[in-house]
Image (cartoon, rainbow, N blue to C red; front, side, top):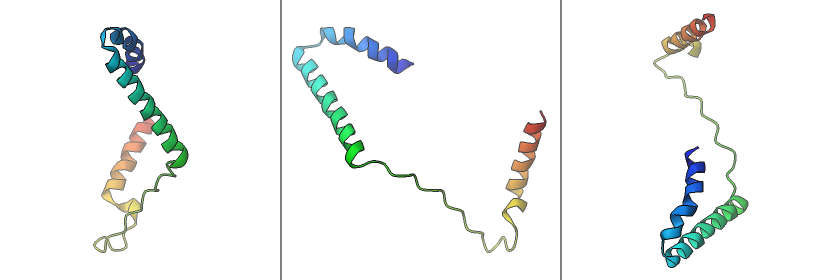
Length: 84
């Protein structure tokens, strides 16, 4: 919401600045926009990396992940929230 209001307020704010500064601001903003578009076209962001599964510690032995204390607490919280 703030950015929309700021975009509307930029017009009256630029009426009082020197013309050279306004020309610089418009040209640098335009170049940054074009650079962003070209980067999106020629170097798109690929799929995000999937989170890794942490290895089971040797100290945990044969304990299954769902029997850990943290998982028991999370399961209890989920059950409690579901009953409300």
